[in-house]
Image (tube, rainbow, N blue to C red; front, side, top):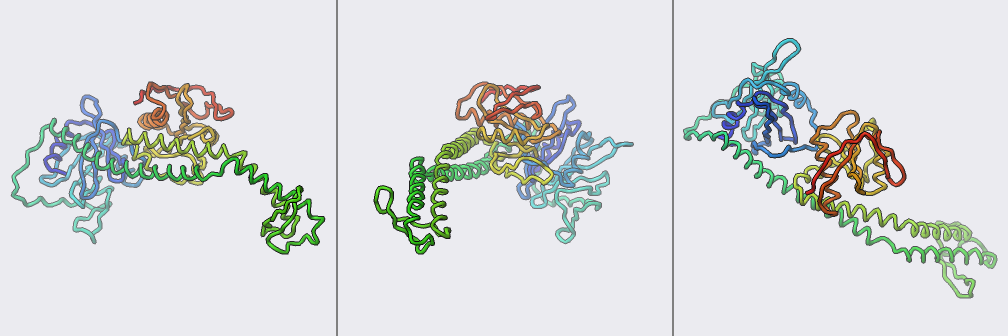
Length: 455
């Protein structure tokens, strides 16, 4: 972090009146949302990665995959949410941003220091009381690692000022500060998201290739019917010849018999059979299995093809919308025993701001989603279109508008990326108001609509 830019950020934040929220979006990424005196919301992001700390601004809100609930995050939310900004300053020539805030308590005003240290490998975020006693910190530092202890209940010692003879840097103006912050975002975006995008695409290409190989390796319908007919013939010949054989015991692995037309056929007897009668029954069982496989082969092909098409749509959507790669990269968490969310091993799922989102890839999965969703979960579908069904597993906790909007963007994008763009209407309502009929056909009530234009 450049010291001059940090001083420019300090001057910019001095024009703010309240903190709307200050929370983590990723492991080391924080969103600082504040409100100026005119009531306008402003958003700045602090990247507190060790040795790579930075600050930037984005035109759109960055949505994280998970919600952080560590003691540090809870204390940060408690102290900073809707707090009044009393003072913003930089600690001399140290790259430390200090924000003095006040919070209305039950009986009196409480005062806190939010301290963001952009100091190389010691980068940290701390919450202190008005006397600089540490209440919580992103990184706790014991005395064994540094002379400057960062621990709950300990006074935070000030860092000595650097002894440098470098000429002071010019503090950028407000316009220059905002331009630098937006440019910093573009640099971070191209570096971080491009790497994430390529990793996600590589994984998706590999999954699609595996499914294509599985599809190619499936037996042909005619081959299955031929095998079923052949095993049935073996069983008939064997049972028709039992009265001609000297014994029904199996004495070798092969048996030569004459079929009903007088032609010799050699039977390979199953090793699991204890006698010839069991061998005949095994042939008929195999015939039924192959016949059943032939009957259901089209379902297997259709299921694999649906998954391949969905992966192709997802790949195309990520290529168009880079920011979605971070969302699709999240791995599905194992549901807790008390959470009766459906077993989503075969259901496409991802997380936005800690909310689990599931989407069906075909009619069968759409039906499973609807059958397993809770009554207060939100259900989404593109109006008058044969689209996938999407569920936000939120229960009674209503997701923020940003999560709903992003879910709509993904739902429409996965449909329109192959079908073509246009204007779409997405209806959503609680699962309790959706009535399921055969083949995932539904009727629903009390729905709200969102208009979305793609691209």
